[in-house]
Length: 451
Ligand code: IMP
Image 1: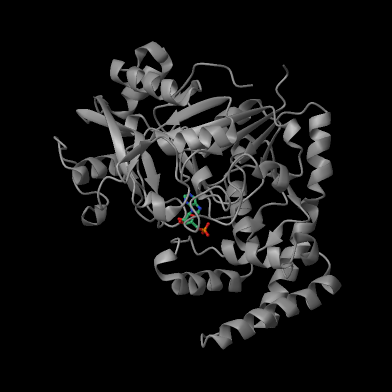
Image 2 (image 1 turned 180 degrees about the horizontal axis):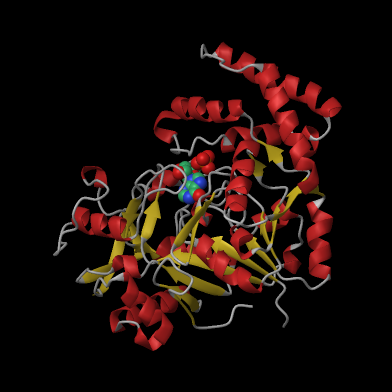
């Protein structure tokens, strides 16, 4: 079978290392497409020890591939132009296409994000405050503006003023300040519109045409399956469809045209934001970035701190320290069923080095009953107790050692890691085809061909 399109999907709460995998696979691709989310995402790609951080642009950007932002994405033009500038300053010329029907984030969407979170109290998701939720809300309510609107001043002005006045009334009705000036935003966004025109296309026709021409496309997921609006842990997630089902709606491509779906899993669990995480390793509020790692980690807090430091688990978008926990095969099995992955990629095995023993959650216990089914409702998950199996851990190694191991291949991995991988494959029933043991492209072992 000729593989024309591959989807790369996060299996948990985001930050599984999708950016690196997309970057790696995009070597053979012609185009990389983002189809949901916005600049709430953050992918770090490391090439020759230089770090590139993206929030909105697809990760294929530094491979000089065509990069496409589909209709399902919400776009903050300020962020978009900043990322284009960064790329250009590093000598890349982004070959960018943007959907005319992607929705636009305005400054008051960011402001509303904070106000809305404050009213949600214990149900606040801990959002990135980038205005993602309020923009998708306006899209669903059919008040939102699309990229096309910005490029047509006569269409833009009345639509924008309607939206501006509506938001102003709502905010003032709850007694909050409204620190925005209509003309200032209008002028700024019309200027963005002028600059956006050259990138804008009907991406549905465009992407389908590329596939017809046998071009190779990667659909790059943002966030992770458990953060999705319908199948994630509602309301502690984001506002878009984060599993592979979101590709069709967010890029205008039939499900029949997605040839392979790759699930990214992390060697452990991480989470930014609120909501229950059954396998969480204690509350790490006492440990701070840079605190020394204990040689012999016994308590959950010490183990969690080691993993957080070794895995650099601090948000790419907000810098927030991430919560960390043991791998959760109950939620991962759910992601495997939902996405019907062809392959899995496991990342950050190196970051778990230095532990005598590691744990894998294989079931949940609830009210005396044991089950391997993800309970979906956050209130039920909150009450679940993880059932673990234990396996021997592996050594912490310096970065160059992991790179050496990757160059030698799978059999050079420590035996404990190979056993850990086999156990995960046995439980999830999907081949772990890509093994990532460091941030660089070269720190990767590919066991089965993807393209
Ligand atoms: P929002 O997407 O900013 O509305 O945030 C909703 C929830 O999703 C919060 O718990 C965020 O921390 C989380 N979230 C959003 N984007 C990402 C991401 O790219 N990685 C991890 N978590 C994310």
